[in-house]
Image 1 (cartoon, rainbow, N blue to C red):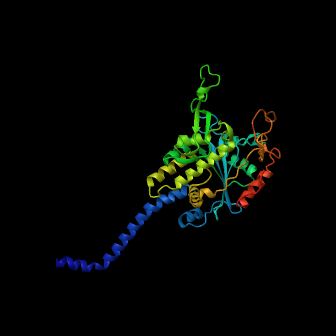
Image 2: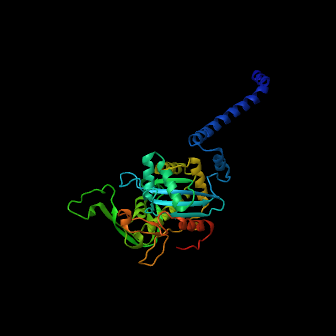
Image 3: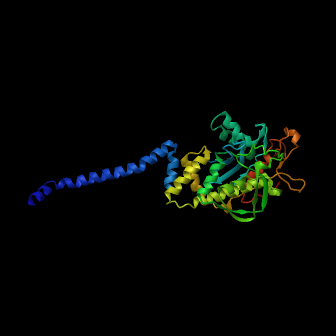
Amino acid sequence: MQKIKRRLLKYSHLIKPIITVFLILFVLVILYKILFPIYIFVRDNKISPQVLSSLLFNSSPPLTQTNGRTNLVILGIAGGNHEGPYLTDSIIFMSLNLQNQDTLMLSIPRDIYLSTLKDKINIAYETGEKKKRGGGLILSKATIEEVVGQPIHYAWVVDFSGFQKLIDLVGGLDIQVERSFEDNEYPIAGKENADCKDDKEYKCRYETLHFEAGLQHMDGETALKFVRSRHAQGDEGTDFARGKRQQKVILTLKDKILQTDKKDIGKIKSLLQSFDQATQTDMNWGEILLLGKVFETIKTDQIKRPVLDSTDEINDKKGFLVNPPLWEYDGQWVLIPRTGEDNFEEIHQYIDCWLEQPKCSLLP
């Protein structure tokens, strides 16, 4: 025993350095296991040091801005085997002031005609994608800039089938339905070209939807039908009503996602995977996460939501858009500015007014 003690005393001056080296190596291994996956994520997603710094230290988000605002568009497509899978069924313009969280959300009618496209604006994404992968985002941003008079910094394309899965993942949404409505011509997926035997009205291709006014809990499939329905009688059958419903569902989904327990790693991972599968964007993951942080600070009930409406002479309703005679556009039902084809100056002034003032007093 005494011999062992003498040996320990002999090498006691080495014990402390050995323990120190061991602890340093242990810490380095732990740091490697933590930081290496982060490095791979940052490298593969081309996240800039500025974006990484903002994520880690809550500094001002270095998202692209013009005059203090970041502008983006959300494009909804049917995807899959639906008819016209790459035509944009919904177009939403958003503008965010990152300093004071002032936010504007505006639905762009998909039937707006542009001479640069020689067609409706909803064909821009499909046309661009046919030319090259990613071209749909580029062309869509350019055409929407023409309409709103604002630079578009980022774009998102949302496939409706993926959108449906996201809603189911968060347990569905509670949606306030403003008015009861019924749609007898909602297309049934997979039956778009059914012959329906001797039925010349092809009723077998459609199902009837009914939504009752009031708070309704909707799963993904029901919410998708709610935002896509376009053949209801009255105001709910218009694209303008659809635009409002789409905004309502998107904002409710945003709030539900942000309420997810951040400690539930499995749920977060599933949401991120579904989100990635359902969308195409020109933002990298760092910018997406930054945008998510910005959305956390924005109160849904404070978002400004003006409407680009059309003139309805029968009901004496004025709007910035008009529906010209069908014969002028090869039988197509289109919308153009009331000041003339491609003359969006009045609409630009209207949007500028909403961006600059808490509540714009400019009316059609």
